[in-house]
Image (cartoon, rainbow, N blue to C red; front, side):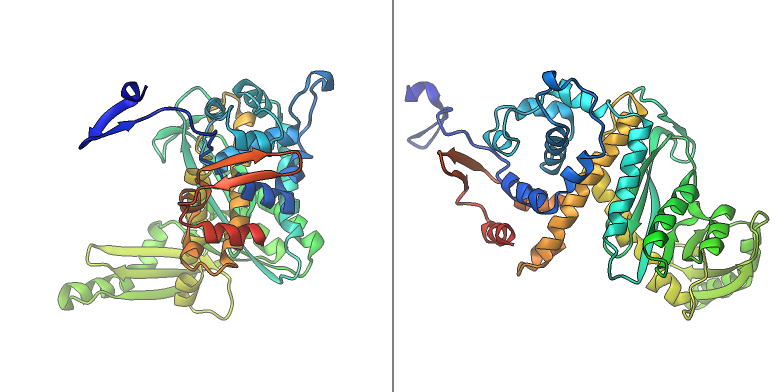
Length: 432
C-alpha cells in the first residue's frame, strides 16, 4: 500500500500521499467571524430588509442564512456563488451555518430575487445605520468617489464608457472620511458620468443626518468629476462645507498663466522644483454664484503639474486646504474603494440583471463593513504590525488557517493548527 502511494523519493525515504486525515478546513477563522456577527448583528440587521416571498413549506435556508453564507464566503476569499461547490463538505461552514450550505442555484435565485424597491429599502437602511453610529460626533467628512467595473458579458445596463474606453458598470461610494464606513454604495449604468445621481443621493443622506443631528457640521470632499452647479446650490441650501476638485479649462489656464511661467522659469533657469499656490474667485457659466478657487502650480522635473480645487473652508490657507485636507481623500476614500472592489470582490458583478448586480455590490460592501469592525478590534490589541494590515493581509495572515472540528453532546471544539503564526493575536481577538 505504501508503494502505491509513493510519489517520489528523498534519498532513501519514500514520500507518500493519501486521504486518510480528519476533515480539515482551510477557513478556521469562521469562528471569529461568527463571534463578530453575534456581537454586532450586522448581517442579521440587513437581512430583515430583504423580502422573502418563498413558500415556507418548501424553504430550507432562511434569508439570514443565505446572506450570512454569501458574506462569510466573500470574507474568506470565495468570489462567486459557484465556489460553494468547493465548500459543500466543509465541516466548519456546516457548523457555523447549522446545516448544509445553500447550493449555487439557491444562492443565484437569492441574488436575483430583489427588485428596485427592495434595493432602495436596503440603501435607506444602510444610510440609517450610518446615521445611528454618529452619536457623540460634531463633525463628519463625506468622501464621494466612483470606480469602474469592467463587464465581460451581457449584463443589463453594462454600457460603453468613453472616458474609460470599455463596457462597464459605474460604482459610486459615499464614505465617512474619518472612520472609513460606507455611508451608502450605489450601482450605476456603465455610461454614467461621475456626477450622475449623486447630488440627489447626497441630499437624501444629508436630510437623514440633519433630522437626527441638526447641528452636525458636514464637509464634502470629492474630485473634479463631482464639481457641478447642482452641488454648489445644495451646499448653500444645507450649509455644507466642501473641498472639490475642479477640471482645468481655458479660463483657469489664463488665470494661472503668470504663476505658471514664474514656476517654470525657476526650474528651467535655476533647476529649482517649486510649488506655488494662488487663490481667486471663479464662476462657471452654470453656477449660481462665484466660488473661491485655489490653484497649485508645481514644477516636478517631468513637467508642470497644475491642480485646481474649489473650497469654502474657513481659516485655512490654500496649502492647508490642499495638503492638509483635500489630498487625504486618497487614503480615506480611494484606498477604501480598492478594498471593497479588489478585496471584497465588488468587481464580480456577473449576474444578468442590474438589480441582482446592485445587490451583489451591497453584499460586498457588507463584507467590507465586517472587515472594518475586525480592523477596529485589531487596533485595540498589542500587535502593532497587524494594525497596518489591509483586508487582503487580514485574510492571508489571520483568516486562512487550517482547523478541524470535534462535536460532542455538550461541546464543539475548534482545533486550529499549532503552526499558526498569529495564534496569539487570534486568541486576543476571540477574547475581546
